[in-house]
Image 1 (spheres, rainbow over the protein chains, first blue to last red):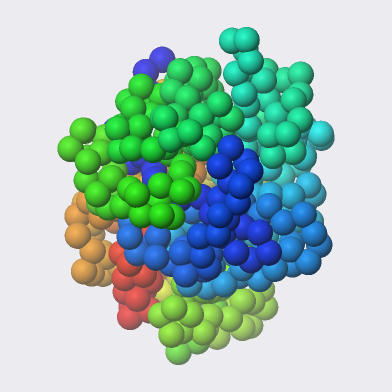
Image 2 (cartoon, chains in turn cyan, green):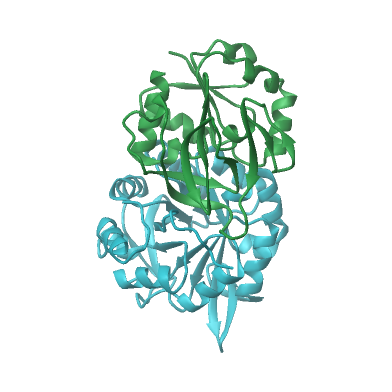
Length: 257
Length: 193
């Protein structure tokens, strides 16, 4: 069936990795570089035309988690666009706290693999619109294998089967990160993305590999993505969001300008 | 001016409260019927599933109170949907303020609709200073059919009512509190009604 949405725009989403209250970005999930204060960055992105924001908490400690909640409150106070919070979320109570602090959506990853019913529980309690399931997958010998724990552990799950399953369980959106592409700045995994979009009927966010404006054009046109997420190209000003959206518009991709 | 956000357990309440705070207005969260009745302006929020939200309204007796309110009331997202006659989501009766049914988007489009879409055919003081085809943030799987009470229209496979008004009751399917500066303008307009 043809997806006929024309007026709904494609979303540009800067992703901020947060550790102990500061923004960091991993290149191929290692070598962290500090790129600033998340609240200041978030407000700046909202003003510069970002459509949404994602915050991924990569703190491993309890103290880090507390700092994250404080950050979410501050972001909600100051930012007038929607944002998603992910990282270390494993229970209804975790989600309740984040949503009460002003997050619009939560993103779950490893916890959904360990206990798939969490997706059903969250969708039932909070509505599927706020449940984003993040999937890190790596193509090995032609097959897309889902990984957990920040991409460090391979599972036996196939990307497309797992995505379909979480859709059935009530996910409102999929955030797919290709580990093959992440940090390479060589473009998104458009073939896998297009396959996801064909197999599923919920929005797909493309993640991993953004390096140039053309990569964004390609992921919307070839990858059929509904949204594209990137970090370093935005944080370090390599691709200004407004310029990017203007170029997308010139290429007949609907964007909010 | 006293602004109350109805707190019945369903909602993106903090975001709405913060949005008004950015406009310099302190919004009170309340499920107290007397406090709600005494407010100058009322926000009726909601995210989640329609039939369970309706159940929560009934448990607190708010289902009988809301339709009798005389001051400006703004329903947002699920709040707006609950102000309608009926919702296909959980096949639940609504508050019956707006004479329209809530239906599910077909599978020809991705559901939920998630992101920024435009509103047009704007017909209310709620949209003073808002240009035709302004972008608003929407997240929903169900929609209000286009109807006489529509004050804004949006297109997602079909044209539907993205805002409704009847007398002192207003509803937006989109989230003004998350729709940037244009959304803030709508909240400002509501405060001036």
